[in-house]
Image 1 (cartoon, rainbow, N blue to C red):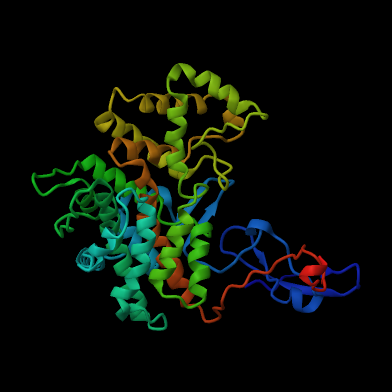
Image 2: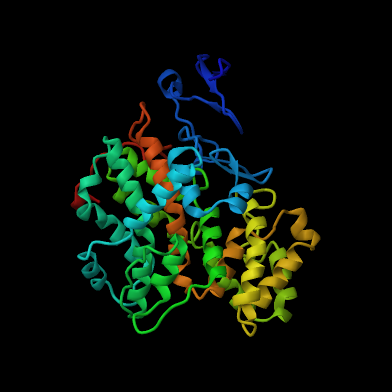
Amino acid sequence: MSKDTVTITDNRSGHSVELPILSATQGPDAIDIGRFFRELGYFTYDPGFLSTASCNSALTYLDGGQGILQYRGYPIEQLAEHSNFLEVAYLMLYGELPRPRQLDEFNDIITHHSMLNEALKSFYHGFYHDAHPMAIMVGVVGSLSAFYHDSTDIGNERHREIAAHRLIAKMPSIAAACYKHSVGEPQVYPDNRLSYTGNLLNMMFSVPCEPYVINPIAEKALDLIFILHIDHEQNASTSTVRLAGSSGANPFACIASGIAALWGPAHGGANEAVLDMLENIGDSRNIPAFLARAKDKSDPFRLMGFGHRVYKNYDPRARIIRAMCHQVLEQLGDADDPAFELALRLEEIALQDDYFVERNLYPNVDFYSGVIYKALGIPRNMFTVMFAIARTVGWVAQWMEMIAETNQRIGRPRQLYVGPGQRDYVAIDER
């Protein structure tokens, strides 16, 4: 920790406060404003918390300007090339890459926690057949504490670990059951012989009356997408999980709150918006007109799946997933589907057009993941569910990190009050 300080002087009163500067291993340092209100009497004002570090974390580092994303210090490019989803999940939970025996044991634990309590089946029957899968997922995950209350003592380190394993293991089973409910097909039990993503595909698309063969390209593509979506620092859903967890809520309730936050179209629904945009464009001959609209500041139309709020350079996840997207389209894409032709043409233009290059409006991970999901036959209302499966690892790791902190306190953001001053009540017959 740095011994440097910054002094802030209040010109109104002449009082000053000396605040310590906290050193980061990478990225910007932070000013500790814990004494700011107590000594000067002011709150700090930061809508959206864009300049506020809400916690210490050793999990994920990103540098939007340089296009850097690291999990536990490992570049995302290396993990995507050499690792798999469950190995990266182990890294996020335990801080180090596993040895072969550790990974085998972890795989075995996750595999054998994948079944759902049979009573949960009746839970699904309570939802309309056309209920959004995210609505079902929020409810089912939130209910897990009623079934697995033997692992909800957050003060018990072993309980926390068991809950983490259960959430990671059961999320594909919950997600697949959401899909099966929406299409009126029977739920499929997990198969312990299959990989994490292979199991998900089997539970989603197999039926009891005929064999289902898992396409290795689809399996590999899902595993890659899941790695890229595991964690992304203190985004809206992760911050929600931490805030809920700070109250002492059980881990299943905390993850359900994260799913609810992810459901928002400004967060987890971006890849779905990409396909909506492609449908609106309709034909590659219409691309020039829509690009002109995107460049017109007076037109509200936006190219969805291009650029990123954090990355002011190329999204490193997009670089990784681009090659997989082309591979999936080559082997699994419907040649007669205009959406795929449109996607490839838009990508080509965005990578060459000076307007987009100068503004760093490159295709992002949502652009490619949406196209891949469509090629794999995953329906659009399941896109955010797929995101939630992967992000559960990050949510759980963030929650475990927060609970283990010795100075952990309940979150309590403050506000700048701008409502009426004190007023006296007026009787109803005198108003």
